[in-house]
Length: 370
Image 1 (cartoon, rainbow, N blue to C red):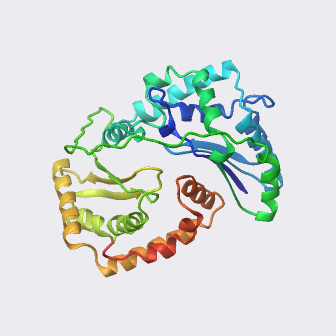
Image 2 (tube, helix red, strand yellow):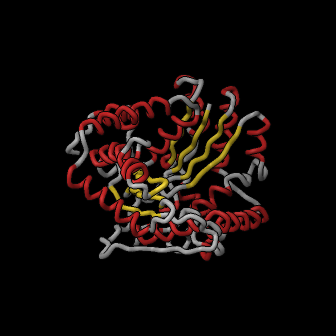
Image 3 (cartoon, helix red, strand yellow):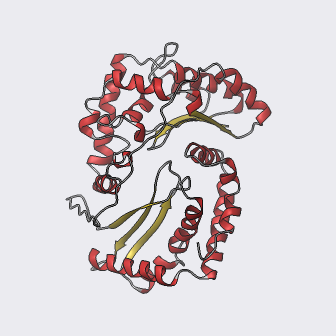
């Protein structure tokens, strides 16, 4: 089975000036409780033949274990303990502080593409918490103290702000009594409502250029703000189909136009992520062919977008895209952790179980006019 606990709290819920707090707290969840020693959680999982991990995003933090079903109750009890009784020793907080700063250096500061994307997000989501990196800004990470993390933990790590998802060789009849027994005594708390600032209209398109000695291959990236599924399901499902029409394989629009016929790019991308509490993001990208400038490539991409806006898409493109998307949805069920990830991320981001279960049927209803 895969057992997941999702908390509806992420980097977007942090206090201004304390970026990185949600991610830092995720790390500390492995550093001991009043009953367990630092590292004991993961050592126990490995000793029982399982694996565990966690991740933080703008809207949520999630913890999961994949393990033989006879050990599920043990895993739930261990998670219930750290969700309520976190108590890391000061020495472990200090050592993990260094680990997180090194993670920031490795994944962002020393990675030109990650550093550029961080800056792009800051411009795209100006005056909004999505404009801050999930890992945090280095100068703010450096100053984070346990005295700031502990109130954050107490405030947001509440059962009425959490979701448990269990996937695998069990039934509801197996797991519901366990959840009631193990998590049922966890006291409810008042959790602040999300009142995030609105993103103001951008008065002009912003162009950012990053030049770095480690960049061997130029690349073009453009980000758009787009409606999330929580805000506008009709637009979100239409964008799901559109992204596949534009970039669903070697036979689709952008690859054919820019790589096959135009010989302007060696790769293209058009992706939409609408699973978000607030706004979603649409990403357009391309890698130029040798001798092609980024300016030429950008004009070619804009020409394809203009053609899309002017003429729309064809019935054949929609039919082929729907078939690919429904196939992908069916194959996504053929794993243990995959369905738990889809359900957990969707529900914690404001969608319903019906939205997720009947996603293929809803995609099938998207019209050309949408």
